[in-house]
Amino acid sequence: MHLSLEAQASAHAEYVRAALPAAWRSVLPSHHPAPEGLAYRTRARLHVRWERGRIEVGMHETGTHDPVVVDVCAVLDPAVEKARRTLGALFQGSRGEGDVQIALGSERRPVLEVRWTGEVAATCFARLEQAVKAGELAGARVLVGDSSRPAVVGDPTPWVPGADDLPLRLAPGGFGQASERMNATLALHVAGLVRPLAIDKAVELYAGSGNLSIVLAREVRELALVESSRDACDAARANLAARGLTGRVVEADAASYTWGATTKLVVLDPPRTGARAVAERLAASRVPRVVYVSCDPQTLGRDLALLAPGYVARSVALFEMFPQTSHVETVVALERVRGARS
Image (cartoon, rainbow, N blue to C red):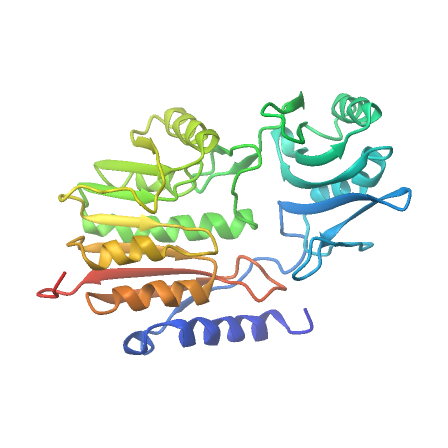
């Protein structure tokens, strides 16, 4: 945060360039600057625990599960920051610890996803109900210990604006990008990469709740969405149906999913750990086009090194999804080299 946004962008570009396979480092990345540097993040994950007679709330210290308590988190959307400040009072009287994810739900009111180890005070549920009644929260889901079913208060469904300006439903506690505005820019960029290719059959791996699917389904004739989370699959189906779009949602592990021989495009947006197994199978395949969306240049570079012998990078684009951090979102469009051995 001591760097200007321009200096951060320059550092991110160099970080990504260094991670790319050597043969691709001459590709000039396009850059999409952050529309705002502060108060942009509409999602947060907090650690809450009872310690020495009081509730502590904070982000995890690097390499630990200890909360670092702060007065203000400058990157959080004001509604999310306001909810963060209430967590100590909400959980007062509880024992143990838990992770709390905050997102925005209906009418841009915060929603909570709580996974707690220990005892949640009965008064906590009463406070949650009062917060929903007062309009301070849209809802909450609380999963305690080994329970398989969460306690639900209000409507805990997260919603974000989709890249098509229609509401996009997310799975409670599921993945969503940090910046709504930059996410729309990224999704429209992916659609723009796919549009001129006139693709018949495409597979989207790690599809989540359909963040990219709602634009990809407009650009390809047959789209298969692969996602391991059942809640996310349900949200993806609902998002497609709400738009009158078609797509086959497959609940499966993207790392081991087998696409058909006639697949012309694979789009993947894996978690920070990357998609090494997918990259290995793509390298041995005949899939002509790949679009790889990554939030971690290191694992992106590792996976692209596996693809470099058979593919060429047609474009690299950087999206400042996480201002004030070392992270950057990258989209790489790949085309299979004719005659490359698979």
